[in-house]
Image (cartoon, rainbow, N blue to C red):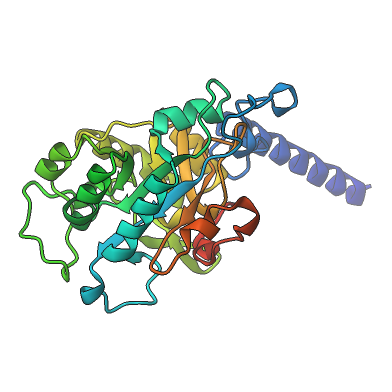
Length: 303
């Protein structure tokens, strides 16, 4: 009799624990125990949506990082660097082929099915906020009347410009950002979460996955003047909990480093991009059937 009584008490304890955990998960959806997958919710019902004939069926989002003259590039295997000469060729190709750059606001409306876009619409993005994006890339973009988004790391923004040296790793300044608003829009790459150090399963992963850090980081980013609904994930890493937390703070669209094209109905918080680096054949990259998973997306994590 005592044996069955113990089993009954154990079962009741397990049931109570399960109910408690479930209740916590429902009221704290950013916790890993949540059963609701906020990361897979799309704003557009594709079953009832039709792309207007003669308009863009997909939009490529190009991803650049560091621009450097070929003479100064001593890291030819670094996929985050593109020679200035190659970048200039990229922009000339896009111009000559009739591509039209669009803003992130336009892309957001396209993804949600609110607007159509002309064929050969394209988005140009830069990550991190290097000074050479202004000193080297900006004049080229300006020459072709192109628009681009610069995802800046808030803590790296300088108060005043430094003397530009192509071989030195330097970051953009507030005056340079102000001077470049005719070409660039400035969006978030987090304030200070672009580094690893959060331990998960024995591995060091980007600290942005620790969602307890996001509230303060977002507030600091806003205090720099970058109050935006658009973000690029550090190293491309994201999670269901991170997405939910960002959405709580008003972020509406975010980019990974996973390779692919953007379509109406894609989840706006998990958009892919196309990495462009030295030697990239842009004509081939922009063909959908020839866009395999980019090798650099190995660092992208979607848990």
